[in-house]
Image (tube, rainbow, N blue to C red; front, top):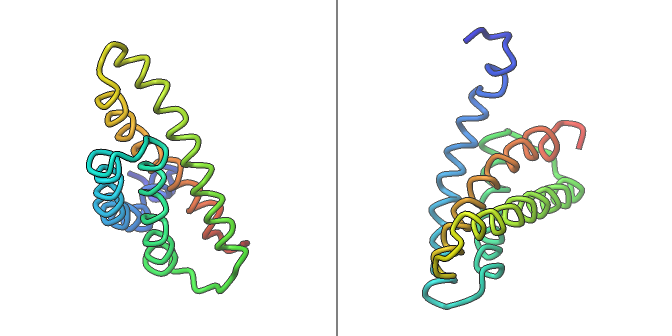
Length: 141
């Protein structure tokens, strides 16, 4: 891959650090989400949102200081981070649920919603990466 290519700029060291942080967030958040849904029997939205409340706190600090090496102290950045997480969450899970219900029509609700949460997680990661890289931890914020 050429160093000047657009793909090289996207898949640089920052991307791989984001993936490592994402693995940590995924382990913690997924455990919280599926425990909330399958053990504590909370609904789809509360269970999936709990993943992002817990995971987002971890994500903010790890991505700010480790991934993007951003030392700025700013409440505006915290607000933009929270807005990014919120928008990505609503888009990812709002898309995942109807898609999964359509694809898995006829399956039990618990199967549909567990699969939907997995699809929502994947969509969230993609949206969140670009939001954090290009908006939240951009030097202009």
